Length: 106
Image (cartoon, rainbow, N blue to C red; front, top):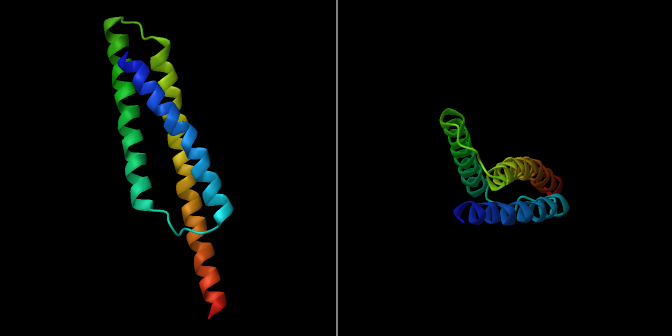
């Protein structure tokens, strides 16, 4: 049951990141975004992926089999970290666009 809840949480996050990426792409501004906030979410995904790697290694050592939810949540952890990395890259693009727009006004 706990694996299912984790997979559903990661799935919901995974569905939310494309919305954030689209907003970053279309708005062409970094206003309203917090790189600090996104960085800590990114670190959280690293911790989650590390936990999965440790569980996978323990399963290999003990001969335990892992269920499909383990692999599903693993997939979404990797997908989510890729998505937030794209959103963070768009943040830097948008900061440059904001600076260019500000310099063209002066």
